[in-house]
Amino acid sequence: MKKHLPHVLLLLIVCAIVFGFKLGDYDFWGRHGEARRAEVSREMVVSGNWLVPHLNGEPFVTKPPLYYWAAAAMFELTGRFDELSARIPSVIAGTLGVFVTYCWANAMFSARIGCFAGIILATSFLYGGMARTAGLDMMLTLFTTAALYFFTLGYLRRQIAANLSGKWNLSTGMYLLSAFCIGLATMTKNPIGFAVPLLAIGAFILLTRDFKLLLETKPWWLLLVFLLVVLPWFVMVYARVPDFFDILHQETLGRYIDPEGTPHYEPFYYYIPALGAFAPWVIFLPGMIISLISKKLHQISRSHLLIIVASVTTFLLFSSVGSKREYYLLPIYPFLAILVAKYWDEYLEIKRTTNARWIEKGMAIPFAGFAGLLCLVGVALPMAAHIYLPAYLLLSVLFGLLFLASGMFLFHWLLHGNVSGTFAVFSIATILIYVFVLLTIVPETNVYRSRKTFFNEVAAIAGEHKIIDYNYEGFDAQFYLQRIVPVAKEIEDLAAFADLQKPVFIIMTSEQYDHLQQNVPELAHTFEQVLQRTWRSAINPGRTRSLVLLKTL
Image (tube, rainbow, N blue to C red; front, side, top):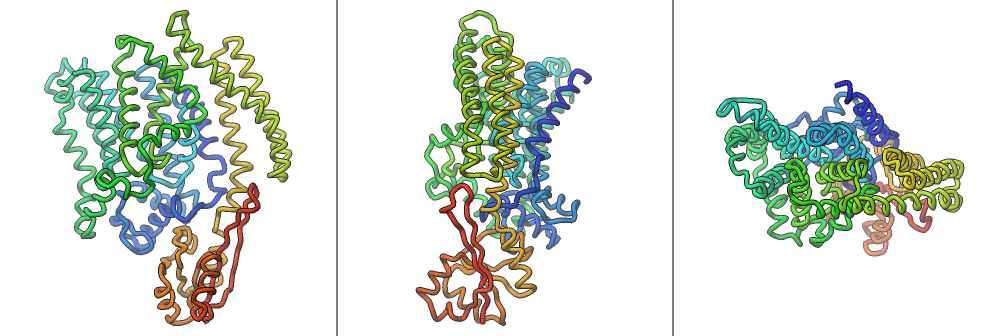
């Protein structure tokens, strides 16, 4: 345990900075995303109905409730409906995911590779960003990773288990834990939770032709554990929401049967460029792939093969679904982190062989490119800040010097073959990028994209009177107003609300209000504008957004 303590402390520090720094200092952005998940959890607490998730007062069962339960529990624990409480479950899941990845790589290879993998995972841009987000995908990634980790532990202990044939043993216990984690993953995001680990395990068994492993895992017990985790909630919700299975079908098989009819439809190859979100470590993927191809099969251990198979099957799984978003691919990130960490370790232990030359080239080119980019950013950053963000000029000069120094150190240690030093500087430079963005870009973006102050003003003006949403359809309204907000989508709906007991308040965009005045002036004249707020982008001043609050006369 003592030999792991420095690694554990280092990973905790990295996670605390990347995931926790200024976590509650920015609001929910956009109409959906974080605000929608947080609002479901808020309504869960307010209504006391923890079984059937609701959104704006209506059943919302497109996803199982595990994240909603976690966020609702944090709201109860902190006594506040705020952004920080909604994001804490993702921070915890992200941190645990880093440590599961560390333990997994340590079990397969070494503690050093585990430490590399943990740092790579924590500092990859998408993973770090999603760990700071109120959403489902970080919890999903934790449980799919843990499922494969426990499967690997069981597999590695199978020789010991062979001497205890037919009996319960540690290997069987690991397989049961794997099934339990698959159940939790399914309770986070439906069938994708079991598809990721089961496809990887199935493909691994096919490739190795180790079919007796199927019986060794005692699949009947694994199925029982999985069903005990998953089945109760699905059965109870089906009894309360009659069209539950229609919704479930649309969210699962419907995305395969009618891919172009699903939201966020993208072509099959969408995730190839989307892997750029694994930055900055993505620059080592080409060299890592070439290194793997140059190896002979007997040079790749079974555990290493499982990681490779998991990466390929997960990538193909998400690519085959019509609905695609960058962050959907998050479950592949722990696998990529371990593969890149193993590649780094091979570079550290390099020997003069054909394979080693590929590793040297695969490392030197990305290193030189990243070092040059850091130097360029270090020089250009103060000039860019002077034009776009003058309030942060001094801070930009400081970070510009740090980036410039990091680039120069990378060049120096690359030339002198100091692999540990280059990894340290590369990681520190990545963390500095996070910190700089959180200190400068995020606050300015928050000013432009947050509507929290507007909704706080609306709440103060409207008091207990009814508030209507006319085609704004943003769930940040419900969360910040802390109430159900009926939605009017058509002019007829708006007119019906206007006939209710006065006063009634209506939220809409300025563009919608202008359209209403031009096209339905007789209805517009029944409203009085009581509040208007406009947000202008600091980086692109020509870009503005505006909302108004109307009151019925």
